[in-house]
Length: 222
Ligand code: DX5
Ligand code: ZN
Image 1 (tube, rainbow, N blue to C red):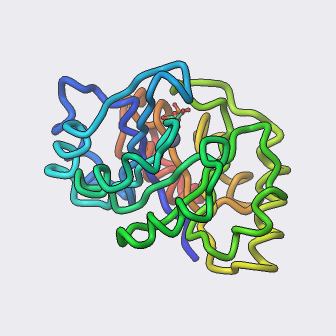
Image 2 (spheres, rainbow, N blue to C red):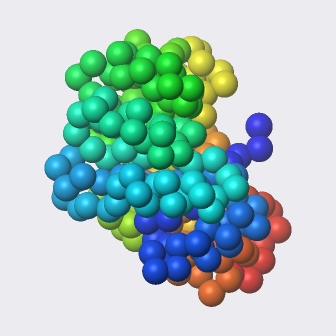
């Protein structure tokens, strides 16, 4: 399959969110990545339902909502109602992950599970067949603009191998420190959805930065 690009609006200009979403609408991006942080699961707080609803109003592409929150089950429906198309919960935040995944699917959303950098892929062995997507964190969740963790490549190889055995249609998303310099290696290792915050929004040419992630073989000035 062709890989997907999901710019993360955590790095957008919140005073000009509509403008930044319109840029994404006209770009080669496939989804809009929406990071929800609660100050509990991660040390940072991002934004909540009103911002997700406003994002939905102006985005023409599906919202890929990444929940970095404790007890996500309490809020799944509210995020769906705010406009989420996909909901990703953290393995580390879900003691009853199977039930949480079923709840996401019952809402009609794409169901994803995110793994922190220290969480082994093997822990997904008994749930992988139920998932639409696995998100491999390539930084510690909580902040944009962090340094990419090299062990991510090994984890991508692991999840690719597991998906080939048990769920060949699995989406494999990588999130954190993704830019022009590592995109090809990430795709080779098994990623097929790339999240990018800083490398897109800090670029002088944001449309070109997105195109360079989507079509790394034809590099543009970004
Ligand atoms: C980090 C978030 C990421 C973040 C990525 O906790 O999950 O989605 O926006 O930002 P960059 O691409 O700047 O590392
Ligand atoms: Zn994210």
